[in-house]
Image 1 (cartoon, rainbow, N blue to C red):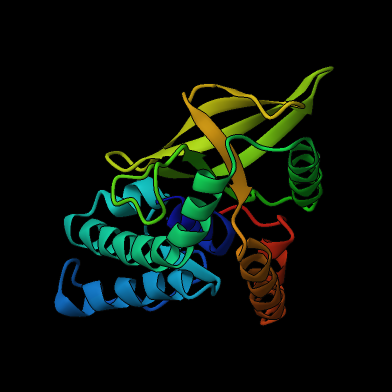
Image 2 (cartoon, rainbow, N blue to C red):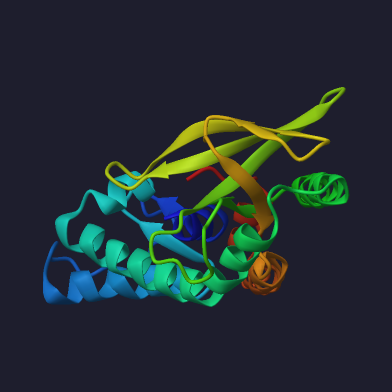
Length: 229
């Protein structure tokens, strides 16, 4: 859910009054109407910016019975794609390292601080101790980081967890101490890892969005925050 919600946050502009005068099939819930909106959803999934008319936001979009189910299918596909490719990486860390090293804590802080300064929310993986590599019951959780704060003996990470039932964010906090100890809203954590492909995905989003924002003067105003939808 974390991946899809961030894509919509960065790439989807919801135009409830259809100020961009897009040609939407007139018959609501017809095959053509569903196909039209599925195409827009697919564009977001592929990291391309879109304007979505007649919906107020992602929560509104997912409340539609057909489109909501379609988005959840994409969520599952994304989860399989990301987690299968990274599960071995995370589990290897969780079996070989009892806790984060002092240098790993410092590196994570610098990585998160840099990415937040560029005005995007990095994705991190939280992991717990696993008894063996490729443990089917191993615990991995994926969240968006929206803030960090540095204290004397630790730094705090503010995270957006996602509730798949109502497609809304829930705020969580984790504290990481210089000795590798982790406390907060999740228990028994041994590591927090930056998603390795995160920079590549954001770079692609920035590239696609920068091209899209030059398509017209009106879109350019939208990208610069000068136009309210």
